[in-house]
Figure (cartoon, rainbow, N blue to C red):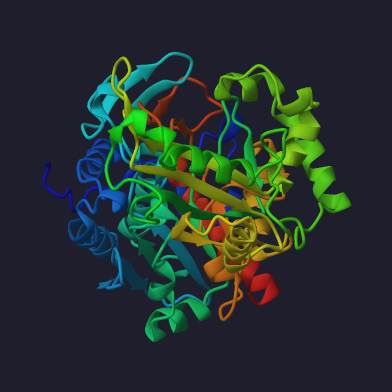
Length: 505
């Protein structure tokens, strides 16, 4: 493992679309950009160092070490105080930076990453190798590179560069970070309800997560929310009923002993309609809010700016459900709550066959929720649905989750993004919500009731997949590399301060 690169920064000179400058809203911008550029190599190494220490909540891997590393990163970036906040699971981190500003901004980080199989990667997933990617440029490949350590490293580099220029930040910062986002933020709410954390966040105008939202031709997407997520497991076997064997037994016994695998299949089959994708859980759509005319308008505008062919190529598919038109598929993407099977585990899975009757069957699933659904509602309806059909031998274990989040298009966080893109000449579209999930509802909901958004003019891909990457040096002048992405965060902080001042927060 590499030594923690304290003092390392990230870098940038905004070259957004034709390198359009951002006028005087960012004081001493050229000097800050030079600092960012001078620290480029050190910042790349800092990102590699962070990637070398993976925190994986599902495996209980480096949970304490990851939290302490995050705490040190915050202190190194100029936060005056940073502490680890214990939870019933993986700890969180809370830090504050008082710049003496009139506006306070909340920042959400995740320091955990998804599991990985090194055999599936073209370079070691914890090495952070620099790899030339055809059509893109020089990329850094590693688990967590884009989700989310690359964007977060760029943000930390941005605030370091401002301070190194001799200026105070234009906003005060409150940072909250968690190590369980990849298991649906099981205990993150315990961090936010700590009185000093809650009180600090309550002073902010909103919370945002650094992201990489730039497309291959430089376009970006503003998201006004995200779906909620609930991860859970369904288990059938000797541990749930004496109708099943405690271990795998000879398959001839299926003539007189129930199969946990078939029982699980039957239960799963009730969760969706015959089309294989429409949720069929009793009452599932009761609180689903339909898209508004404005939301449909935004989706149509986004479709015009983000080619269907690129979307299909990225996903490796040739058609959408029911051969629907592109715009219809996008409306489904943001408005449809889903019941997805992540994986099925039962019996023998090696080469060839093996004559066993499994003693256990497990399905790993997730819900994606849309407004105005809630986690508790979804879990309650699932359990009632199974009980009504006699599946009392199917055990439901919820491992984490939260509801959807929404932020008004006119909030200071969103207005600042629009202004930045318009001043920089960056083409952008707005989507009502991200089909993926992050726990913004913890900030959106009571007691904080704050705007929550994502922002970042960076590029990367392969989240949750082999060869995850983050763009370091771009071949396309319209697309940001690391230094340009860092300067976008610098500019964003100044514009947020400007917009918050106009509206009083």
